[in-house]
Amino acid sequence: MRLVLPISKCFKLSKLGARRFKITSSWNPGFNHYSVGDREVAELRDKWMEFQGIKNWEGLLDPLDDDLRKEILRYGEFVEAVCRCFDFDMSSPTYATCLYPKSSMLTDCGLDKTGYKVVKNLYGTSVVQMPRWTKKTFPNLASPQSSWIGYVAVCDDDKEISRLGRHDVVIAYRGHSLGAALATLTVYDITTKFSNAPIVSVVSFGGPRVGNKSFRCQLEKSGTNVLRIVNSDDLVTKVPGFVIHDNIDDVAERETTHVASTRMPSWLQKCMEDTQWVYAEVGKELRLSSKDLCPQIINKGNVATCHDLKTYLHLVDNFVKVEHKREKPIDCSG
Image (tube, rainbow, N blue to C red; front, side, top):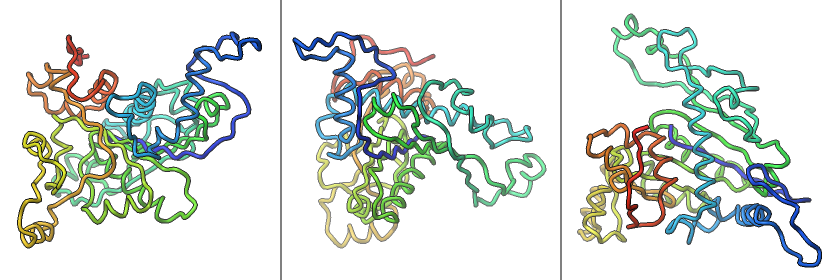
């Protein structure tokens, strides 16, 4: 899975509050100032719409805003919780279901004190036709029954709502990159089918491409906000197909993203688009690199680790700005 889809509703604050910041009573009527903790909370609640992409994250990604970094990592924890809760044991009678009840799911998987409550489980059914021999060897795998793919959680803690500056609803999916694709399709459904939908944003990790240029235009027209966190060394983010982009002139960047130049006859470009192998990148991209921050992963040729969610969270936690290289690379082996 690699995605979280926050849905936000504006909340009128009646008092300052926080969950993860220590607020001291340093306010003095004579000086009229807040404590450091108060200022951090105020900055988050005042800028939450920017963090949800209302301005397409302009000025927040390069260098990466520290408050936005915390929000991305916080949503990443919700994604990781899905993986922790999923029963991967194919011999288990509860295979492909959630290991814990809704009431205690987040706490049981180690994500307690979030201020969120799981209100709904999400299920999906694969339509892939499995070979007949799998029915005997892996009966659960070949089963057409639906499997647990994520959850919906609502922030119901007054202090956390006050800190965020809004009511927040999180939809988290699981699956090897499938979740990121599902999130993009889900946000499109929400914004196109509900005329009075609140601000809906996608924060995805390591997702594949979804849709062509027409689909991207529909997303932009509906006011959908998509932030794609991409590892340049993650092969999954470079498939399927390829993209045609007029604004990428750098040869190295075109090679790493499978981008074709539009400096070609219009008839040829039209023929390529008709093949249905031409995709368009959607939303705003935060591009990271294991090569710069976790070179030991690349040296070992560990392609799977480049796609791992923990690697993505390591990269987000240590990313500063484009072309910035740490003096000492971080250890991603743990």
